[in-house]
Image (cartoon, rainbow, N blue to C red; front, side, top):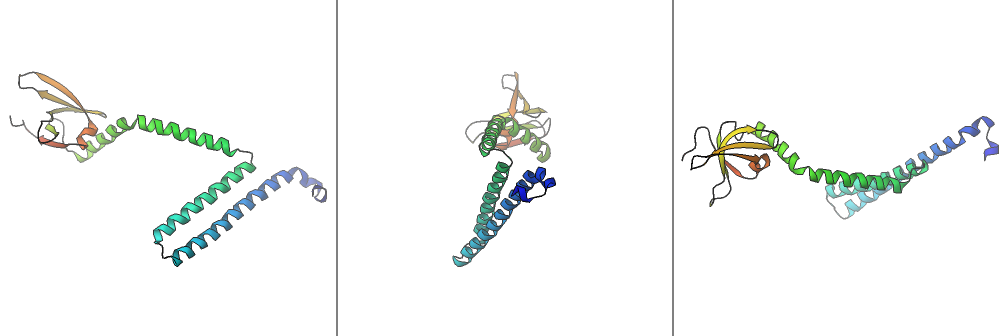
Length: 185
């Protein structure tokens, strides 16, 4: 084929071939997607499938077709699918471990935002985190609210003082009793 083309086209032949292959892959994926959409629509009509199921099926199949087309195009450019898959799974594993490790910290930060916006209690309020009906919970005056903890100042019956640092996420897992003034004894 090369001898039939003009001399000035020879340096561009590789790029033209690659472009035609990419266009052929995209056209094939589009035609396959249209064909599968028609089949799924007919199956849905024939068996009276719910429209939500048909929509999920069409989108899933389209994703698989176009992902395969993308991998084929990247292969034409010399990118290995194995290398891509290894990189993707490696990044996904690291992200999952990092997210799991930071989950409690992120949860406390988010709960701090909720404390400031919903205002279940404020600074200097006296609160009690109620465990259940049988045993008393954490009780004290709110002296500080930071990103991770809320600090409660607790006065014990013997007259001594303690400071409790309660994770902010705990306030959204338990019921809270609040007094604006001193709590009843």
